[in-house]
Image 1 (cartoon, rainbow, N blue to C red):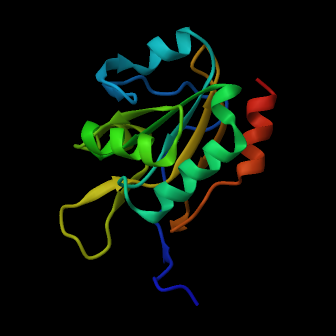
Image 2: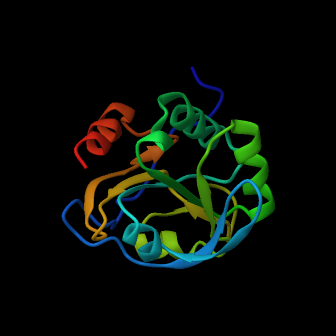
Length: 168
């Protein structure tokens, strides 16, 4: 038995494969600095994997980024994450996980709201974050693969993401 409760989440209203990924602009953090960048600027350069994850430091975020690193996805496609964590926390996560990716900082959780994947944290009034989600997006901003957590905690099918990346 896990040391935590598994919680069913309300149905999400997320964009699906074949739909256009909503555009947004937020601070994009790398190992050295951050700057405001639009998702459309990144897709104009080619396809990407967009990973929504819980706050930096939460075990699901750690597992997710370890998997990204271990599978070498950043060698195959642009990988960007997004959470409510600050740019400072993102820099620490990138360094600790040894991942060559960039992370959007969205403290107000507006992007998760736009994507229909807000997770109100159980027992914490007024505190929310994005539920775990993965979107493989092509250079035209069309979603080629979409997965959104149905329970907390939940992890994506990493093999399915890898297959979607390979199909780009």
